[in-house]
Amino acid sequence: MCWTTVATFAWNTQEHVEAYYAVTCSGAVLHTANLRLHPEQVAWTMNHAGDRVVASGSYGLPDNRKITEAKAEQSENDKND
Image (spheres, rainbow, N blue to C red):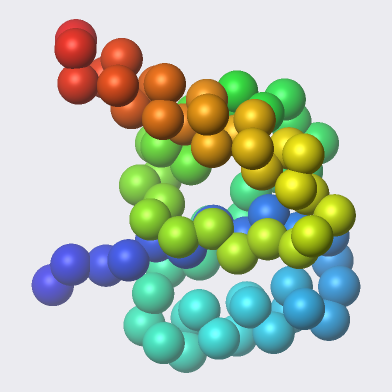
């Protein structure tokens, strides 16, 4: 069985709680990303966890772009190693 891992990049809000239940009830694995880490560190933890989907609030949009770029760069580097 192949599990889908979903990262949540959100503060502790009602939306985060809803995502928490929705992800786990759908049979996927939930990975809560640490909002306080540097974007490159968040990208590394997401790559390491194998996150395929990221649930995020609009407040994280600037960081989301940085994380997406770092995640893609790290994935490319891993392929070349």
